[in-house]
Image (cartoon, rainbow over all chains, first blue to last red):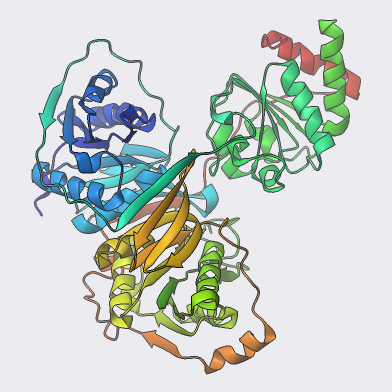
Length: 334
Length: 261
C-alpha cells in the first residue's frame, strides 16, 4: 500500500428514508477542523448511499462537505449491512480516501467493522475526540473501561484510517447558505442480499421525552430510592421548566427509561442548567454532562467527585433540601 | 445444529486505574470474569439447545488462564471449548482478533450460528463480531433483543436506539445479543462436576492454521500510542452554606439569576 495515494477525509452520510441523521453533520464539523490541522489539502467528502437521496447533498454542502459521492440504487433504499459494506468497499478502492469517519450509531457500529475487515485496515471504536499530533499523525481518543481509561489510537501504516465517532461530541457548524460543492454520481454494481430480510420496524414508545434536547435538567442518581423521592425531582423540574434525567444506577432501578439516561452509555447533553441530585459523579456520567452551561449539585458527601465539575454545590440531604427549594420557589411565585 | 459462542475474559470491574510507575493498567486486586454480555450469548445458545437440540462450542482467545471463562461456559452447559492461545496472538487489535477467531471457526467447521455478546466491557468496541462475520462471509444481526431459530433462519428483534427492527437472517449467520435477551443461568453443581469431562482444546497459531503476520500485534493496523486517565475536573465551586432553609434561599436566588423562575 502506498499511503501517498490515499487522500481526503470521508464521512458516511447516514440517512433513513431520505432523512439525514444528525450525526453526519457532527462528523463534517470535525472534518473541517481536521482538514485545517492536516494542512488544508484534504477534500471533505460525504458518501451518500440510498434511493432518491441526491437532494440531501445541498444540506451536506451547507454543513461543510466539499464533495458528495452519491450512489443511488433500489437495493440501497433500505439499509442492509452487506449491501452497504460491499458498496463502500468498492468506493474506497476506487477513490482511495485517507480518513473515513462513521457515527458510532447502531448502523455505524455494525457497518464500519465489515468495511474495515474487507479493507484490512484499522478502525477505532466510539472516539470521543479526533486530533492531529505534532508529527502530523491522525490520532483518535477512545474510552475504555466505561471511560475510566482513555487511549490515543493511531493507524500509522494502513489506509483509510477508519473511526466511529461518539454521537453528540461535536457540534455541527452553522449552515452556510448557498454553499456549493461537487456531486459525483457513482454507478457501481450493487449486490442485493436476500439472506437478510427486514420484517418490520416499530417505533419505540418512550415514557418520557428523550433527555438529549432538554434545556433544563434535574438529574437523579443512586440516592433516589423510590417513586416518592423521584416525585420531588419531578416537581422541581416542573417548577423550573425542566425535564428529569438520571444517571445509570437510577435507570437500572427501572423507574426511568434509557431515554432519560445521561452519560457515556446514555445521552451526552449540554443544557443551560442541570441540577444533579444524589449523583456522585462517575467518569461516565461526567462525560455526558460536563459541558452544561450551569451545573448545580446536591450531595450528602462533600467529597463526591460531582462537585469538582459543578459551579454551585450544596452538601446536604436532598430529601430535606429539595422540598425546601420547592417551597421557596412556590413562595416567590405566589 | 452447531453453535459457536465466543467468550472473552475481562476484568470484573471497570473501575481501574493506571499504575503511575509502569503506565499500564493496574491489575493488582482486579479479578477476571466472563464478559457479562457473553453470558447472555451463552444463555441464548443453551436455550436453543434445549428447544431444538444443538452442540455448543465455546471459543475464546487469550492467555492460558482464560481457560477459566471457557470452564464457566462448560459448567453452564456448553459441550466443548477451544482456547486460542499463543504469544503470536498477543497485542491484537480487533482486525487481528477477528481474523484469529474466524480461522478457528473455519477449523472447527460446520457451524450454523455464531453467537457473541453485544460488546466486551473492557474496550467496548463491539467490532469483533461483525469482523468475524465478514471474514467468514456470513450475514449478521447485531443488538439482538430476541432470537428464535426456525427452518434454517434466525429471527431477531433488534434494538436500534429509537426503534425496534424485526429481521430474519439465513443460517449460517452471526448474532450478537444484548443484555435484554435473557437472564443467564448459574452453573448447577452437576454442571460444575461434569465440565472437566468435556473436551477442552487449546490451539496455538499452528493448530488454528493462522498466518502469524495477520495475528497479534504484527497483524494489527491500530496502534495504542498512550493510555491515560481522563483529566480531573477543577471547576470553581460556590458552595451554599448554613441551615437547609438558608441553602434553599440562595439556591433559588441562583435559579432566578439563571432566569428559571
